[in-house]
Image 1 (cartoon, rainbow, N blue to C red):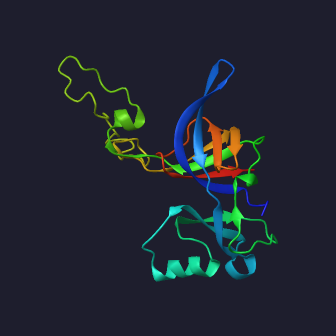
Image 2 (tube, rainbow, N blue to C red):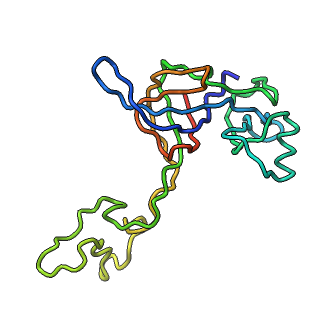
Image 3 (cartoon, one colour):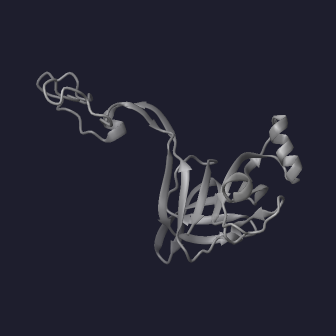
Length: 206
């Protein structure tokens, strides 16, 4: 089980702790035990992994998904995720991955889905400075020219324009674990993490 170094949790929110007279911003993540629902092997599935149930308790399941939980003997949760594991590690369905998996002396990478902010213009989405707001300018929040009709005669792919902002998977690397509370299943991580309070995040340790 020690080979699996990814633990899923729920973002509780941000606060601060004090290191002497210095305030340190931290994010609290509640990592309830990740229940192992299925053990995947390279021979049968093509890769070695653990399918884990994470998040809050869930109702209104389809018969197929409810059957997975019943077979493993674990309670239904909001999400099913896969955790890579080294081949040959012997783990049985019904076991759990807990915060004891993490080493507070090593850095972690945290992956989550950031907040969706809907349709946004170029000034908000890409931090464009905009045009001057004098001498009759009527489009000072517009992007301006996006190409040239002569050369190259097209708009390049990836041109920064207005559009949907947020609701993307984001990974923040090399974060420090400040402390781990095994009794409350809490992990205190220095800095901000992606996503809203209550959002699912994955803590990965090399």
